[in-house]
Amino acid sequence: MRIAIGNDHAGFDLKSKIKDYLQKLEMEYKDFGAYSAQPCDNCAYIAAEVSSSVASGVYNRGILICGTGIGTSIAANKVPGVRAALCNEIFSAKKSREHNNANILVMGSRIVAVELAKEIVKIWLTTKFMGGRHGLRVSKYSEVEKKYIRDP
Image 1 (cartoon, one colour):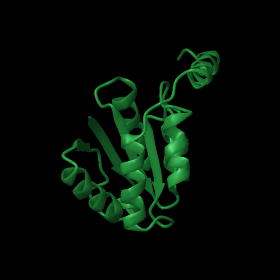
Image 2 (cartoon, helix red, strand yellow):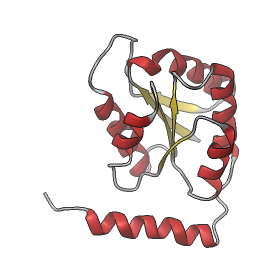
Image 3 (tube, helix red, strand yellow):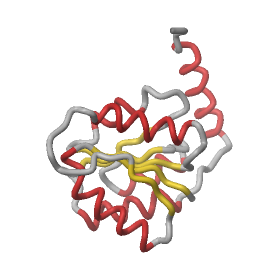
Image 4 (cartoon, helix red, strand yellow):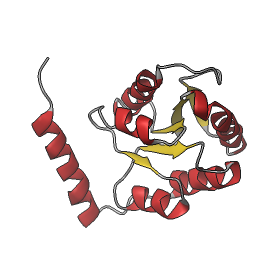
């Protein structure tokens, strides 16, 4: 599995720990930044890069980390084909995969401790989409998305 990962300045330290964990799991990943804990305002652009790399199929899944997870969730879900789920605990991480086929995991570094974040990542990466009636739901997400995409 190939994973795209990104963060804002607040998520830098947790992202570093998650990258170490992904290496331990022998997962291939690409780091899209930010590359330091210095405050910057490019979080939306980093989220968009991670999201477009997942939506295009270059990467299978993505992980985004910011202070609360809210900002990167908003930015990520602007990219057609992305189903980013803010999961700051295990139950949501599992259900985001089983029921919604989430392709991007978002976490808040100011909310989730490192060991819990690792467990969330593990559950999220190993949980399979259930399909069936949930597949119908996911296809409806795509229908709604297409309805509101505007030509430039």
